[in-house]
Length: 488
Image (cartoon, rainbow, N blue to C red; front, side, top):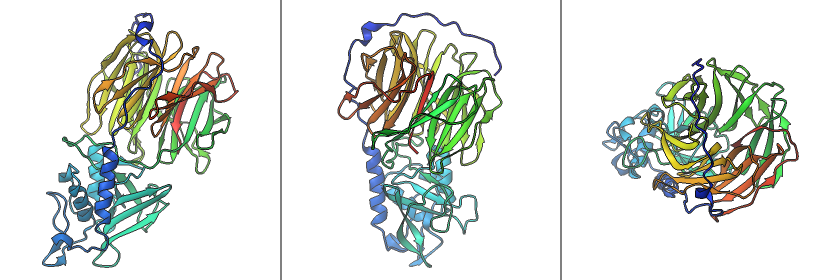
């Protein structure tokens, strides 16, 4: 993708008339059906505690599974039959992918893009994937309380096995809390069409935000904010390596994946694990060069990295941290002329946004369950934007952009109803240069670099409809770029 083609940007005056409304955050709220599904799955599973393979005449959950019981006796190892039966009782779709083997649940997650390293109530947890059929196992996540995860499964205990529950704080992928290694968590698919997973109920959002900023020395600095304690650690150097620009970050499991463009216009990654206070150091992601900006999100355990090429087109690279490989950069869409990009995800669908040569915002939806993109379409007719960032709370995307007046504007897109609120001024404060945002439940923490090169924060509560106003995060100055990742 080494190209010197440059799209011509059409100058556009910021259309302030359509952005005069100041205040309300918008009436959109995240749907509750995902949490209800997880709770229903958990209730069904827990209602079977103590049962053996022949309860209800035997367990099976789909056309590819055979009953766990025949003639009053267990027919085979039945952990997958039990998990499939529980999912089937609660309207989960795509069950034709499942069979009597635990590994089929992992393959279900691969097929529908719902594999994750983070447990959600209602998820299947697969152990020892890739091992022998006598060594693997599958069960269901039935409760999450703080850092404790409760897992309920069939065919557990001594032969012939029963439905039992066990709890652990050692739930990370790769750990072995019960003698078998956790391979991943698989969320169920629901809805009228297979391949459109409903976002699952997740553990309580962390009040911690990891904020990263690019200093005037082209090194990256990090500041960790804990909103439950109202404290910040202060900016400290992440790595002594310099020459970076355009940092972007995402949290996957218990690690932060920090990406940046080097002086060679290639993408580098540094993985930070806050539980051990360690960083991997910056390493080259892909040898492809010629990028001008990057943005990142994640679906499940897969990092979705997007880059704007020198040809003003958007490219993507998928990092599978379970498999340990990258797909390589590929063109998302042949549409040229983009100047800035931002990305977030709802469920297994990536919401990609770009500022076009007309200074308007365009959106492209990538469904990683079906493998298709919608194509770039105008989000709103309002023009004059210079930079943008996006985060999701539930099925609603909060899109923020800096106008030519250096003020921040927000637009809320509800993907359940298909509507956008339109861009409205977030605050009257002006002089901002760059934006970043991080969600916490129904609150968005919005950050901006001011004209004094310091970082300011503004907290938007979408439950009450109010903003805190921009306040200085740190007195440290000299920053030119910023990104934020939710706490690990």
